[in-house]
Image: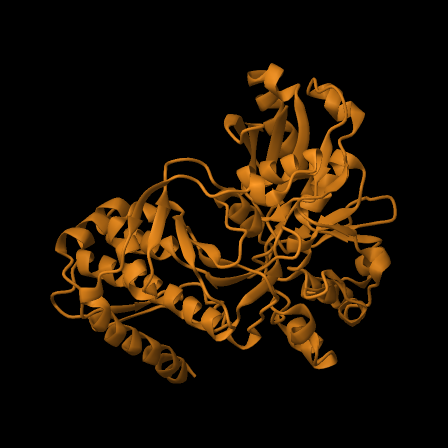
Length: 487
């Protein structure tokens, strides 16, 4: 038997096929039409583009591996979170999906929190424009004719599920990012729904990520040459799916993701919110498990920005920084190029270089950028600790994890070892395929979702701990001072 993972992103769809031992058998991808930005701060996408890319990717996979695809018994879904896909009474799409990175609903966030003072306590999160509910509040105010037609609100992967199975279903991890879920109870909150004028009839049915959510439509099974019943799992939001791919589902297990944005993710056995510091507290894709995230909006994207400014490639900049590295430099960088979530929750925050001199060459600036992102991860760790969270093990993923210096900086500043997996794909598609396996076979997720072999473990450099503690204190002092000066 084989199992298929479908990872739905804003730029495209990736599919991964695994066997019963979790080994990758084949993969394929298809690009989606890029999001449109009709106004500054807006970001929208046509849901039909996700479906077109999904069909194209699975078509490619079935042509390349027909005998393996014919044996598919379970499918799992991963998808970008928070998107508001509005459907009418016949499941017609009412307007383009308002995506996770759309910032138009800031005013509605304030209005929602004022209308329901217990909002943060129930949802475990601050009302942010990225979440789904404030987007609906915006539609209610600015597009009342559309709002009046809403029969269902689905997240992106739930819309793809609808077309795969005919079912309106969502998993707990993705639902937690709507701001309509009582995250502790793992159920829709009537109070939260009422703030946006909706009720349970507008919501999809909830299942755990490793549980069945429906069966693949016979006509689609026939299209791909699959015989028999194919179970579609609840799946997971993109970060929870990535955690399932890397095996971080047990309390204290987590990962640090050095991608375009940065994530410090940790799995929990309890619901532990810290809304004052903009920690995301969500349900995990595994029953009776939650997770927290500290989110950095510009991680490797900060180095990418410096690359554009200097005309040097990222690899050259990080290599030059590593060659000259002796410890913290004079320069300090605040990586808030597009605002920041954790811990500041400030979309208007901006980046800064401080401590520049005639000696500040591209290598030193690159080191400062890498250290600034590292300090942002240290901020995330600090506020997770404030929420009562203990991180026992961290794996490193993402493009920035190729830099030995960056991983050493992170290990030293978090004061814990960072494990680097053997080369492989441990992303959302693998996590989704594993969840598909669990749903189809009734398997215990803890036996299926395991951590990969480790290539190397990066230990903290204790000789630099004191110097970095001093530099981090300077870094923390800069944000409030610069924000005050910008007023």
